[in-house]
Image 1: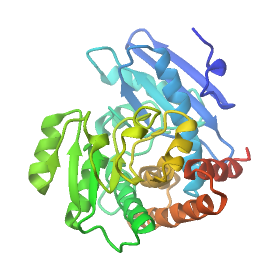
Image 2 (image 1 turned 180 degrees about the vertical axis):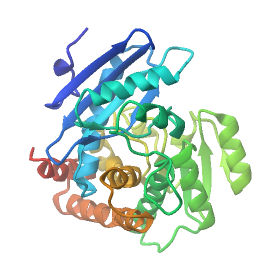
Image 3 (image 1 turned 120 degrees about the vertical axis):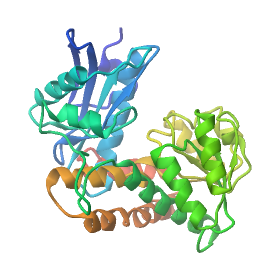
Length: 349
């Protein structure tokens, strides 16, 4: 097996930690990219990988993205990510989650975890039995914290509106056609916001029944997961798993804007140039989808209530406009501009 530091996505990570607990069946990875601004914050995902080496690549990419996301959101947090490797049956037990909590605790506060794909609030409670370095726990009404998905959706919605205004000059989204890939917590929340504003929606999800049910609810159209990227729309919004934008999929895009909540949407750095070369306006994923981490970071830091969280999230459109302005001025891809800004903030410029 290739060592983590020899993988293409290794980026001077401060630590790549592998954990195995035989009794509970836990196999997990925690990648800490940077603690320059504070403890590495990032969710933990529970996922089945056909090739376990892909889990390390995922952890490396996601943790780097969290460094950039937290820096660009103005949070005093570094970047890290956890991955719990699921078996083919995706069996998960409280003992496994508690063992993961012990793994977190062994890092002495260098990693703060929260929800990600495959993890629920109940799972976070189980993890918290073994460590205090947990955010996103259920909280009382009006407080920061809890499921980060709805707050991520709110930030993506604001970013989508900003992207439409940037690309078209339109004030609002009424009549704008948006193709949404993935209608879980984030994509589904985005769809509801946009439908309320009068957007025309085409939806897709690997769970076709979920996509159809939401389409029926909102008066939208549902298509297959394979077809969504080629839909003729004004904006394509990826809200599922990453690496969706690559040398094969980008030529299929018929939208002039890409803005969505999925992490690591670009398969390679070259894909940023491919979007830019086609004149497609791109909202860098870790900027537009920062709502969730703003929510859970402020909870962990004990700072602010829901109004404070919303106020921070509402700064996302301004950050995007700054990136797009520099992209135009320098004729550089928006993703490269954002990376440069984030690298400077964490002392790697």
